[in-house]
Length: 341
Ligand code: 13P
Image (tube, rainbow, N blue to C red; front, side, top):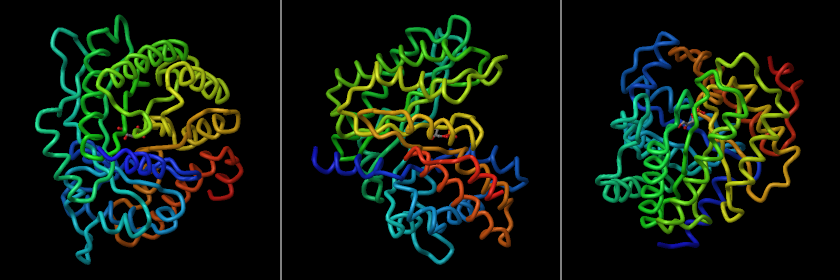
């Protein structure tokens, strides 16, 4: 393990004013996104769409530090034959790779899942590093409901995250550690805070036990937020305050950066929450974004599978990337959204 190399990469992933583009949708997930815009999910269409994003030079050069790729994408080339990984590097961003194999039902825990993919991971990491990946991602999924999450599910997922993170660092690949507490339920913000605190405490204990070097990782958590079906949604300031409270209680200062997932928040909510945290924060870590939907929903809709819409889609992507870059500095203003609209 080369600790200097790991800490430099981790620091570059969360450098000021920049964040991560999560473009690592599995074939099943991207099909759902394409269905919504009436585009057939073929390898060529997936390539064209992702090429559009990676060739958005304004967004990529100014606001994006790294891109999380899917197994298919890291092997694909652009229309002119340039590997997509090269496009990302040419823009000054770092290529990364999703290495988990998805969340599968956890035995004896109805409704709960365990993320799989540890078997053979060392060899897969070696291959991905050879293809240009300098960081990786593994997502654990924790649902909130009656009697859920169970200790069984939290412990098993935290352990798998730590095993993954250690294998990454052994291969000089920076692990993004993503324990996602879902916002799908009807729970209130305080229940999300309680569950997120429990999950993060467990994850950091497991990381310690597996000897993961905190300086060489990035945490990708959910924000502390009410479930989508909750009757009352907390205001922006409360989300920011409670998210920071939980993070301060759980995340050691040795972790260089925290890059949030958007998790089903609207584009502007995800931006407003990140901005509010960076306005008030005297946090020991950098706070930035690693958004999938909150960066891509707008450009996907504008593109809708038509080559004529590529430039407009790139403008939509650059706008969202810029808004989130400002939020990562606590300098976003809602008027900027209205002016762009
Ligand atoms: P969302 O921002 O759409 O939640 O996606 C981020 C991600 O990478 C989930 O694993």
